[in-house]
Image (tube, rainbow, N blue to C red; front, side, top):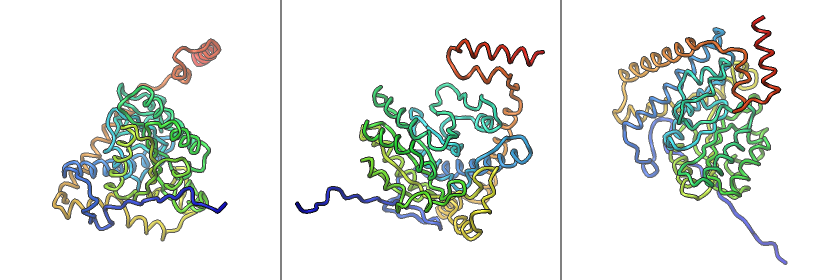
Length: 357
């Protein structure tokens, strides 16, 4: 019998906004100018609270912090495509996504201070706690997406992860399960080129991460992750596909981590200044600002007002954080179970007695 071709796949890449702020009019989505200004505002606020968190950590007021500098367009673009009904399943570098989905900044900060209340979100905010184990959230997203399908809810589970997490078994299991069971899910890879100190070419031999979708039988697309319009278009298409019962989608957003992996890292030990400089020229915030200025939608006066507004907001949230009543030692037990097992009740009581003695 002759050899025959049984499958052929093409992976698309989407770019709309170039580094100089010009757009491809044929691909540009219809977004109200005020909403575009809102996207820029969201991204600047992210950059500002990220920078403040680094300072808090250096001052000893925060345990550690994973910076998001350079990845703001992905989190803002996807958030614009989501609704309050949708579930957000974040990784440890999705502070911007969490805030745009309704989590207060002081709670985001609280988590990294080491306060469990940083995971106790306001009623109605559909967001999972931060997933620090690399890749575990892919399975969570598949499970939530399947639950939404079985319940018949008009909602979608949107899961974020980094390029490094695609080397974990959880990634394969989560996407395979979601595809087979038709989960109402969208999976977003923030490909920032580095898994701590491991470069992408040591993570995969594939040309793209988006093409991995074909192995699971679901759509996959690569987008310029520093182009907020491309991110929004890809996310909106994927979310609406899942919402209407068309199954999950994998989005690879190509970007760059302009900061260190965390405040415990020194990226200068494994990447070059030339590489960093190249990606700084593709800064997503600078790119969007150039677009707004060219359209007459932004100027220096608005920029100064935005920066001041962001700093005032951040200072107020830090005050809320630092005015919180200190946690009691027994609270390490109280958030684990709806009804605490007897052996933990005993351990908690022993701890209370020890602290009080």
